[in-house]
Image (cartoon, rainbow over all chains, first blue to last red; front, side, top):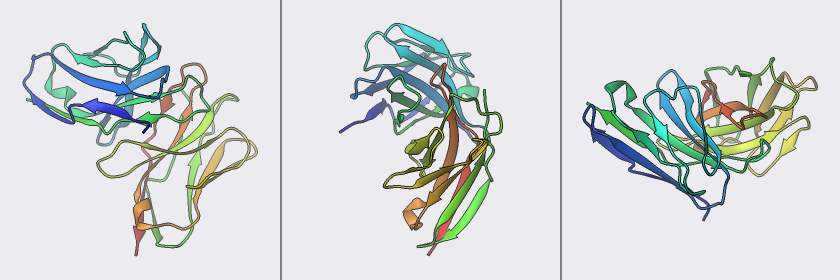
Length: 113
Length: 110
């Protein structure tokens, strides 16, 4: 089954404690991206990757890092989380073409206290 | 980035057709029009996409204006499971980015 898998689904952490949210896809997609969703602001792109070892900033990259060492994985790293990073996070993947559909993960709800 | 404008909310009765409008007056010639929906507590789900011509699939139809400045997602017979937030999105040709707006919350009544 084609899918994008995020882990964990829920996470409560404290300010400053480094964390990683994993994202994995099984469709051999080149393109992967991370979004955060906040009430009233919709989904905003954090980072994206058009292929292995190629990453670029989205609209709200501050406070986040990503890596793309393998095609299937695209982890989101928060080196020093702060309360304003409390949000719902989604990973997405697709082929590298604008005419193709994107697949989204189920989301990770992060709370930073 | 080209943006889209959608009504905040719409209502429908079950079994009736629903027409969800979207304006994208600053669309460029290479932007694809995508529609996604997000059910409660789930990630966005692909519905349909198109460039210039009208498109049909098993979920919906997409009608695109001749000047491409607007489009309409058509659900032919709404069901309770179609209650969701529907996003009209332009996919950027250069970055492949999906540029989300605030979407239309569709309520379906029995």
